[in-house]
Image: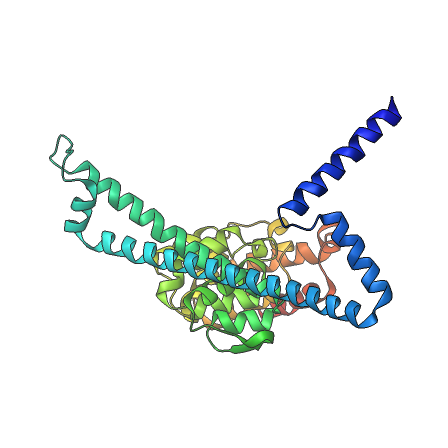
Length: 321
């Protein structure tokens, strides 16, 4: 039976070859055998065929690149168009009412469709902005920018040339926003304090949001809580405002030795600066603060959690109180 089935299969293949040949086509397997025979006999033919195939693959890659480029152009154009239309909707009552259909109204006579159009426009605008910031963040991460470079971008004090003709600058609001978020989330207490002191008002909201998620609170507990609210309200506009906030935090005394013990060396320096540059802290609070620092330095458990650099700064802090 197997031999019979094999014979039937070969017969069918021969029929297919004959049919292809009568239609003017060279059967695939026949062409392959012919090509292999020519390659084996003629080196020049083999080289010519290899060059043909290489050119064919190159043409395919070029075509793929063109298709991908055209797709990106189309996608970016659509994003730009959607963003511009969203801004037009947000800024034009007439356009919102037109887009909403000018039909359905609530009990107060407000056009429901217009409100829906406004909500959609705001969602689109915020989504596109967030997407652009995230794209800038991916560039920052891809090129592995260090803290100094990110800080420079966040403060718009540095332009960074990168491989491939890429140039990052804080002049791009998306690059600057991404750098601010990265630095506040992962920077040192000193770097975060510099940003909070120098950022212009248009970045206060972003800075406050990043601060709420930042790990810097683990090494400087005063860089969080009410400070986030004060940033959102616009109460922190310069270094002096920030130092006053730190001084008031110390004067308020809402901390325990366990809380202050996790403060790192850089953060202790910020507290010393606050004491030196303001007149907020009373003599009584200075004495209370001395006791807290004494506890941190003498308690074995608390002292074990502090680095040598932190202990050194705490000793300096205690001596200046």
